Image (tube, rainbow, N blue to C red; front, side, top):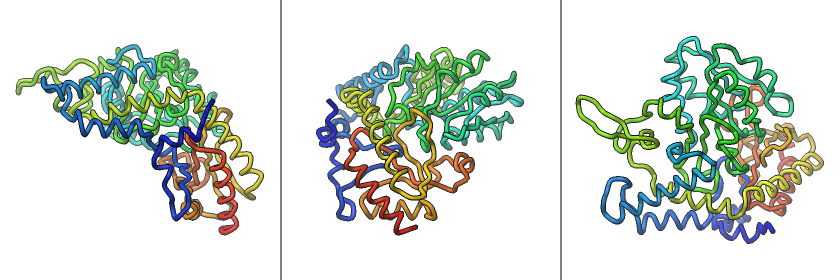
Length: 406
């Protein structure tokens, strides 16, 4: 049985009060909170095993190295990659996508080529490609969406031509909650010899991700959105593609030998991991995965969808003039909305005064805001530890805010 009250006791921050009111944390899409097991792993790393990895024969270094490499094995199992060589640690989804753009894109894209993104992409999956475009001159084409916020797959098929080299899309939208059909996108793209990159930042916390089944060539995600520490991310890459790519950055750890006559690089995955990694955060990511699988990813998803459906239905009935963006079937527990006649920032500020943390603005998705015809939205997003009673309080507070601003 899913016991949310027992689960909540693992998250110390949920005991906080904001302006004298119990914290209701509905900003999980930006970053999730952290259970004690993960915090304890960070503390233990700094207090007991802090030494640089892969560079020492002394006990602390070997222990820290073992913790990091065990975490790599854990991540490989978690996403069902075929080898730990395909698991690269980064600072987050943003760096992982920049790595792909700089290394793969800088090698395999040429003037006259085309790539396909979607209208709902986070800036992290737009700007790196634009930076590369300014140097190479390829064309970016954009998949539009249907009125419910799902991708227009027929339009996607129509964008593909003999010059298309890459498709890079999010698995789940950080604004709409839409879960995109990655397996179908990969099937279509691969039938044309096109490489597929997936931004999985919003999907890994809510869905069981199997990179072998999805058949994506690259898949990126962040620890801090899946109950883990900040500053740690993962890039999965298909081994045969990674082997053909040059290093993203140069420095220590990613080399085999260095001389002023030239340098040879380390084997996978280390040739993409220059410098000292956040080995303590990486070890703590292991504990975050343990937490998710102990609770049960499928059970977390069911719980979140219950909160999503419950809250959405009541919002539409009880809040006059509310506009919800994104109604695609099977969406993640994200509700983006605006109140009639109210600025999204004002709504977010007033909810904060009532102890409710939501996100406001364009959510690093300005092209999507343009498509929706708005400057920004209020976003409430749920996680494993949120409750129906929190939803009730949110709805009552939202009605109060709507009356104040209406």
